[in-house]
Amino acid sequence: MRFHKQMVWLEKATRNLMLLVGGLGVLVIYAGFLYLLITGRDTSVLPWYLLLSPWICIFYGLSRDKQLTVFEWFKNLLIRK
Image (cartoon, rainbow, N blue to C red; front, side):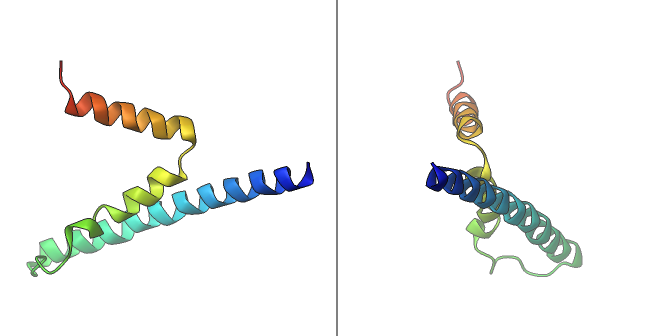
């Protein structure tokens, strides 16, 4: 039973850390990208996945139910009735 409690704690800590890293990543990367756009510098050297990487951290930081909700949202977004 003690091992299970430790694993639950570790999972919660990891998810919270992923949410924190993802949130800070969104702020830093998008602010830097906006700065480059405003100053007129070339942004073509930046890979496109740089803008997506913090969102991946945020996604994996969500609970399983919220991840499934995100999948449903994408499915509804892509498949219009």
